Length: 193
Image (tube, rainbow, N blue to C red; front, top):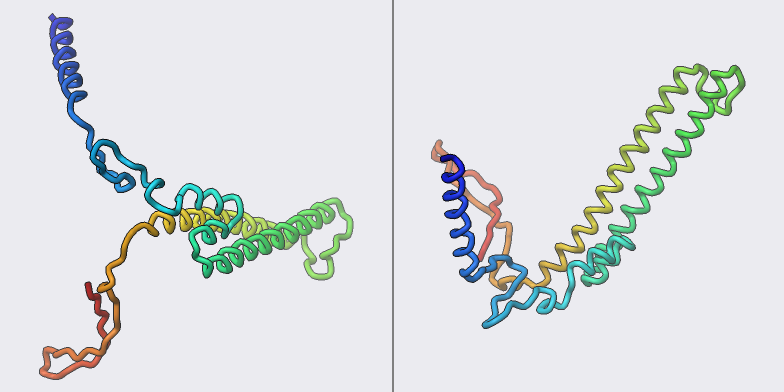
């Protein structure tokens, strides 16, 4: 009895699946443009390729922004990459120096930091601080690197959209009535569309 019930249930599901195959598939994705017979890909319509922008930005930070013609972002990206690189290198050098000094102190030898840091526990504590700072900067640098790739990709996508000329954002002076029958002077943010 159970086998028959499963067979009927499977047959009904299969008939719905076969029926679903006959219906045309409509694509609601914004990356496709609806045409008469076939659909054109977004990359064929747009002059900027988002994947190329992301790839260029991944290979050399800032090149995706150059590809998107957003030249003002390039110094920001390069300054961020160079700053993270410098501080990661600095913290790594100090960490290795303090680690070697702590090893020398534990063996009873003199270390290069003996005039500044006198105890082994202080060496270990400072070593751990510089290691933690280095690791945290690596995480932040990686996030910055990924963010500039995403920025190039999204900017290439958004280049295709038309912006309404009537869309405006402004700051205007404002006078508001208060509950105590007086007036308050302030600033209002106005969005016009």
